[in-house]
Every structure is written in structure tokens, then in C-alpha cells.
Length: 116
Image 1 (tube, one colour):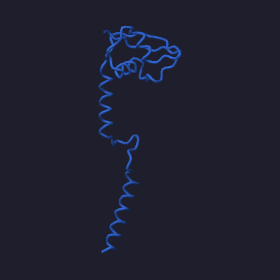
Image 2 (cartoon, helix red, strand yellow):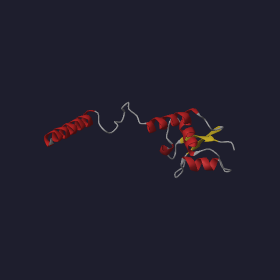
Image 3 (cartoon, rainbow, N blue to C red):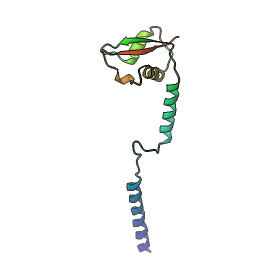
Image 4 (cartoon, rainbow, N blue to C red):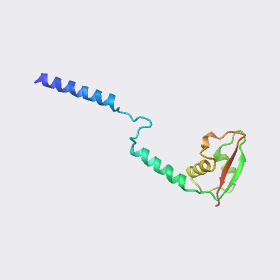
């Protein structure tokens, strides 16, 4: 009886190793398999890209030490009601996909203006 248990255990290990090496246990970047969370994140990103929340725009040259949010706060002295994700989405839309974290001092970017 012990002999059969050892044989089954060894076969189970061989099958597990084969599966791990052939298919992998971790998702591969660029593979077609996606998790549910990745699908939800993609749908939310698509929703943000389709919606435009700003009312007007202004082109500003970025000075050293400024970020997207500091510039938006300077433009809206009375405050603004938009969510940070909407502000980032609008900025990226207006600037051909340039990420808000990648703005550089000395470059001119288009910033959204929100009505209260």
C-alpha cells in the first residue's frame, strides 16, 4: 500500500512541475489571460477616457517645482470639485497621452479649467 502512495505522490509532483513549466503559475505580461481586477481597471480607464469633465483649457509653461495638481490649484483659486482621476484623465487627453507624472519644467502643456 505504501508503494502505491509513493507512486501517486511522485506522479502528482511530476504533473504539477509539468503544468508549472508549460503554462506557468504566474501571469505573463502581454498574455491574453487577464484577471478580473485587470478587466475592471481597464473598463474604468476606458470610462475616464470617454468622459470629458473640463469646460475650457489654457496653455501654460511649467516652471521648476510645479506639478499637475499645483498648477490646477493655482488656476482655480476658489477651488474645484473634480476628482483627481478626472483631472489626470483630462490632462492626458489634452496632451496626447502624456502622463501627469512626466511633465517637465520648461515645456508648455494644455491644462483643463473647471467651472464651479
